[in-house]
Amino acid sequence: MSRLSRSVPALAGVAVLALAGCGDHVSDAAADGKIAVVASTNVWGSVVQAVGGNRVGVDSIVDDASGDPHAHPDSPEDAAAVADAALVVFNGGGYDDFFTELIDGTGTDARQVDAFAISGHEVGANEHVWYDLPTVRKVADRIAVELGALDAGHKAMFTANAKTFGARVDAVAARAKRAGEARPGAKVVATEPVAHYLLEAAGLTDVTPPEFSEAIEEETDPPVSAFAATLDLVSGRRVAMLVANAQTQTPVTDSLVESARKAGIPVITVTETLPRGVTGYVEWMTQQVDAIAGALART
Image (cartoon, rainbow, N blue to C red; front, side, top):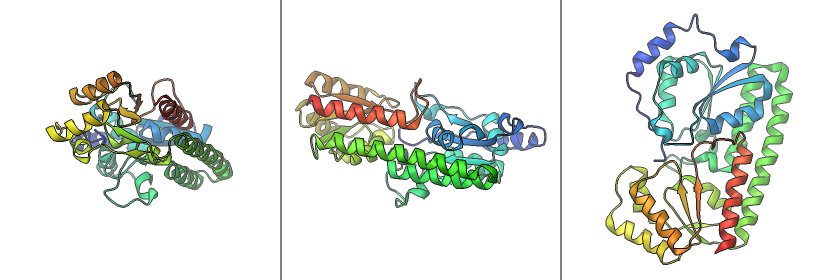
């Protein structure tokens, strides 16, 4: 499940509740003088925090890496937070449509940062752009611009923070490239194309049959032939590693992971939100790049 296609039941009712309380509800961020920012996930929330520092109060709606982020229920609190925000940051590209529905439903006039739109990728391209390191740097720069427009007195600080963050992201990209140089073009299988852009940055080749990936993304069972072909790549040790999305586990993906381990193929896990105990985007990406490097070194 690569799309945050959370249902938005009774969104109109939620919006009414949010708007009805707008006159009285003041976000914690606004109350203590910080810029109120709402992000669709804690990934983008962490980028906002890196740029805004102590001048922002960030509310990330989806922030649980222990389960499927798509199951997070909508609530009047979500709508109220969006309605009160000065800036909203989301992934876009069809990934977190629930969030744009909240924006439309509340009628907020908050400034918006749409990561996929900033990426420059064509409509229909892989939407997991938080794994696209150049895009993340662009988003940080845009966030700095938007925050500077909201708080001109700290514009220079936001710009400097974005520059520092961007340099750290570039270092992660260089680290990914070095990791891949150990085995240029090494083949991998992924339960979902979530980390597509990171694997690409490492120069790795995802050979997962498209029919398998599409079925998992659509939450359906893959065709028998597609599963058999994917399983053969793993059990036959034709790939350097299996990349598994920890937040989408099904009997099919569990079977693939088990087969990889039996065959001695390294399994690395990726997530769609920051794991518990990880507070920064760069720290998170560095850990995942190091996992890739470790897997390549073992095969």
